[in-house]
Image 1 (cartoon, protein in one colour):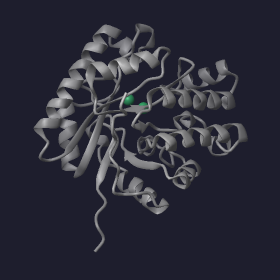
Image 2 (tube, rainbow, N blue to C red):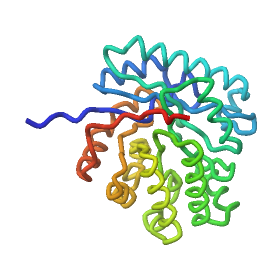
Image 3 (tube, rainbow, N blue to C red):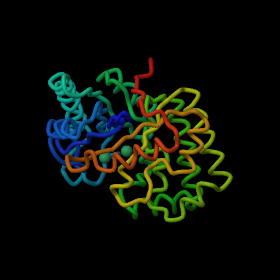
Image 4 (spheres, rainbow, N blue to C red):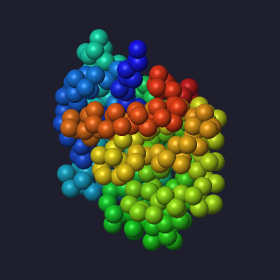
Length: 284
Ligand SMILES: [Zn+2]
Ligand SMILES: [Zn+2]
């Protein structure tokens, strides 16, 4: 008899309770994961900005500042640890967080790890050279203009990602190729030699540190035709023996469980281990 493949998420559970751009209370999100039959979930809320100038537009609009956001983050960790205990007979919860790549992260993130003791972290880039690129198409075009075009934007992204992986050794590397978010030509662009060389270099580093890659299903939810990681990169990751695990990157109750079958099927067809390996915090 075929064994059912478990639903898990290495990256998800963003909630409206703790960040402005998500929805719902964290407890309701945890309940939705239980209802959808998840075996385990890493709740990985965004870190607060170190400085006011690193706030996203929705945080600015909401009248927040970096101190308020740090306090909110502290409450998130407490609440997540409470829910982890409360629902421990129903689901395995990891209390994690997702990094940002603003200048100063190399000290700021390890300081947060020391202070809040997460179970693990997701290492992500939503900025290149301190330019937020994933917030809107306008942001993306602006970043590309400043850095001298799309190719340069990609090269910079993968160079900064390489540094981030070396500096933080995150248990999970978040949405590896997010830099393609607003680029219609990404499938040809990622195969350009100077970009592909950087991609394979980063994959080899991930392999060397034995990190997990987030197979990020939010791309499907937002209308892309494949998750992050794109097929050619996924194939290379498999060849290198890298662990890849689904991450739903949920930002509210209504995102939970959707596209999970599709994501699991892709990973199964590529031959990835569907006894999903669990993330562990690198020993700093
Ligand atoms: Zn988010
Ligand atoms: Zn992210």
